[in-house]
Image 1 (cartoon, rainbow, N blue to C red):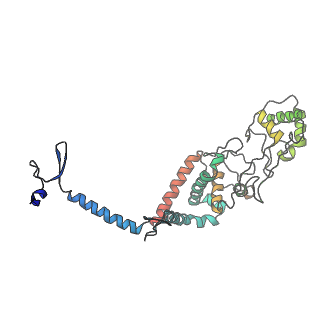
Image 2: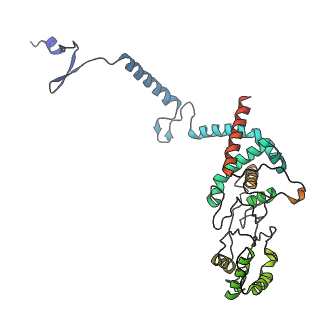
Image 3: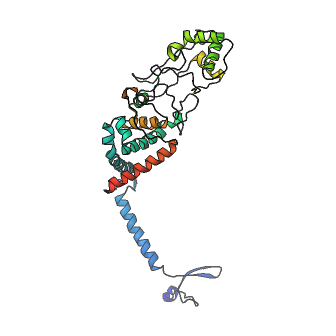
Length: 332
């Protein structure tokens, strides 16, 4: 009869006195050491935690998606909660900002900082694609850092430009149609060359030999919009041709192209895309960024903070708003 007890006896390692598992590799025998107690406790805790996680959070895949979990957690709910917190902090300023006039915003350091920070953020999200992150623009896209405003640089003017757009799909959009003098055969090529030379002389270029001829063409064809002196008119959206600021280029070829084919750039209407407060913040931001104009009707200039570096303005006001929000929410 076979002795089962002998077959079940475990081999004990002579050096360590620990049972072996019976596994051996190249003369090396595996010892049957127990797992450390601390490791076992951590393992048990992770099992308990995973069961809790499966119950509380979405975890198990099903044909209809995944189990919802008792905590009803989703990333959308988390985003909504964080947005509610942001909105609650903004409400401290929004209620006051919404009813404040532009003059009141500029005169109130807290509202001014709030508007500048909000405007800077909205600009980066919505305007920087065309006007550049620094608002310096490019060919066909106006530089918003200078003080040259085609449609006016007062706060209401800027607000209207943002709300209604330029040649946009809005009933109140701003439109200035320049005739295509060459394409529509309103002027001959020679006449266009003469008026181009004259226009370039208005901004400091050399006086052409046929100056008088170009001046006559300009007075007949262009002065109605651009003015007899070529300084433009904001009420019509006619650019000033007597300075050195050119939207589509100030070289002879670019100006010739503008006269021959005309230009018809489009800026979208932001009304309906952005809320009224965001448009108002953008208006303040751009007004301060580009050396905006003061309304003539006011009769008295507002003492507006002026900073030469727009980046420093944004950094400063963002820090001010963050600190103000922190103090408000903490009850200081």
